[in-house]
Amino acid sequence: MGGVSGVSFESGTPSSTGSGSKTVTASCPSGKLAVAGGHLIEMLSGGGSEPPFILESRLTAPDTWTIATRAGVITSNYRVTAYAVCIDG
Image (cartoon, rainbow, N blue to C red; front, top):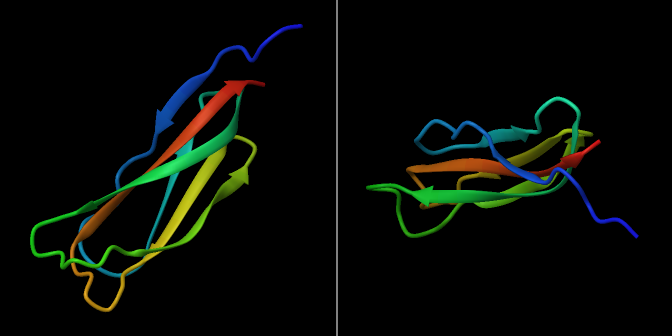
């Protein structure tokens, strides 16, 4: 019985800073498939104490994990980064 081969952890480009809605992705290298994903939210200086709402955290293509956020009422400065767990396809 074999295991999973070629596991890698990929990060996407962080979003711009500021408030509002943000959508970011993390993509696997060519020939790999995304099997899981996640995110990092960084509350920045002057960003308030309320983290943004996570609207979406899901596979949006065989090799891509997408995160979508929306700022809360008192969220004013944050950045989000998406991550993907990839395996050989």
